[in-house]
Length: 321
Image 1 (tube, rainbow, N blue to C red):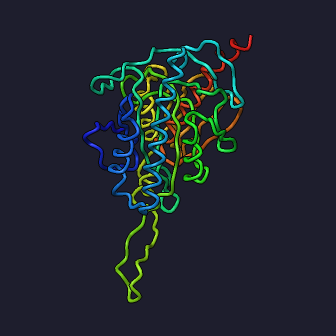
Image 2: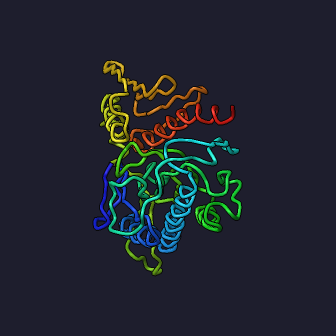
Image 3: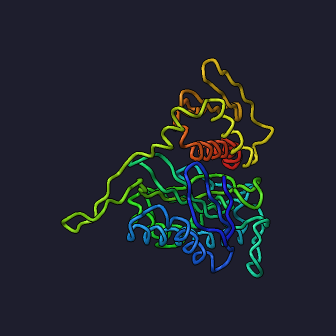
């Protein structure tokens, strides 16, 4: 993962998640717009799509201010109280760190500071830009968490998520996770959207005067994923990513170089397998999620999500009792 300061915004590169702190005040949306526009300037997004991304990032950043309003009434953070599960199994009310004073300079070491994350996933014509905004409050202002199929007018900020839903074509969502900046122990949620960002090479203007593009696979990333990275190396990179998120000392790893297989045990009910260019995550329900070695950032993030969901289970059960 690459952590960026507010002054160093340019560039989003495959294989890394780039994270920026956002102010915990009314300038949050403005900073998010500036960061995203500068950071993705070299990805070759069409101007209209870039404008849509800037607007969506602004709306997600604005949501963090409303999440802090939940904290002002005793909601948010890591410690759960008065939890009532919604339709998606996420707590409606949580409790944790007190709201921060928005005055003063930005200090990412203080708990509760929102974060903007950007990374690329998949390859070639399937490549996507993923934008996530993290806040340390798991709950939602008006109860049930919104979904792509159900975006109520009052969800979090009013029309904010409706805008994200429309502009992303339904390619958005939210999940439990952990902070990347200002302390890995801080838990919360990330709200995200994804847009197509296929690799394209501009041709010279032809005799008709039309500018055309030809899409091509990311040869470098494909070669690295399928030929250059062993299971042991992939598991090592995943382990390092999870260590950064607070899993250091909890992971158990076994490598079998002869069969090009590595197994990373996160907890009793969560195991990551690396073999023949594929990462597979198993869950207690017997589900399998799979990614190529080019998507280790996504695999690590989904592992954190699954772990947080498992950890939340007992709290929800206690709340129902």
